[in-house]
Length: 444
Image (cartoon, rainbow, N blue to C red):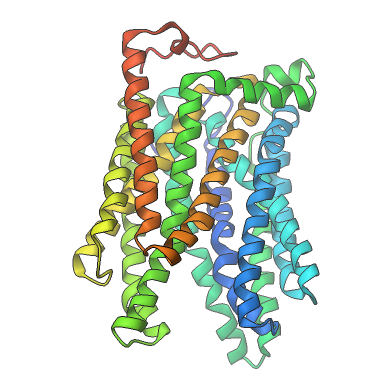
């Protein structure tokens, strides 16, 4: 098949426009699942009759459980995809996530809820791992930044799925269903999206791409070790650090912006929780999303016009400045904060896009799935720190503290990337070749 291009992206040999369009649809649904439970679960727990104090503890426990599954399985999912191909792993992940999601509101006890959450977590590990890996397979090297920008755009649009699903319980109760039945039907709709995406992915993603690991029939253990060894490459190691902070950035913004605004609105402005959410949180969250939509395309373009290490430096430097600037916010309802959050959206998605473009460039073809799987593990640790550690800082120090923490971590990655960029320009031998691959770093 002749090399094709679509939406400004030059596709890899043997990849068609239909393959890439199917992938972007799968990303859209995958991203919707990433935030769906955080939006829908509070209402479900209330309907299930779980005590309010237990709800908070259970929410934290279930979230930590899912991240632990990610840490344990992302590398293995990537290594498995190196052996059997991306398509079966992605289809499995979408289908299992959809099934677990549909079963979730049918739990009759906390133990059953944990079991169903494990199904969602295992499916999500495969799904999220392939969401990052497939784009590295499908894009030509010179278009890797733009491909990751389009992926981030599809993922940002997918973030609108959970709020839309959250409107369904009210619609269903208005048609005469009781609260529990309305929740069950809502989750069934959400589960059906995953099953639909699994069918479309099976039909539209490219069949297995040849790679060295499959041709030599290496064991899963050997493939995993190959992915771990890839981290000895300085640029791959930087991409792991960038994954840690970029995923943490997204987690902190998602977890604490709305919480801060609702608390401020109810305590300082005398608003009800729903009024604070509508008047304060929604406009500012939309400003962040608008920034992310713009930033995904901007950084995709930049990452293809400069070296990927330079792109990481630019993104992490901007994020360091923006997240640290939250320290200056005493009134989150002030108008200027909208502008700050718009730039924060640009910064957080730029870190996301640039880190993925870098790991996709550096990952050895034979161990690409495993290498990017460990990239996902680094991101999962960043999410854990952002949500768990950030929650403690939010409660014990100040609402701005989680943002300042990630401002400092972004600054550390900024300095790291500048140092590596300088070494690459000086031609330090160990930075000139990716272990196990033929990718040169002359661009850097």
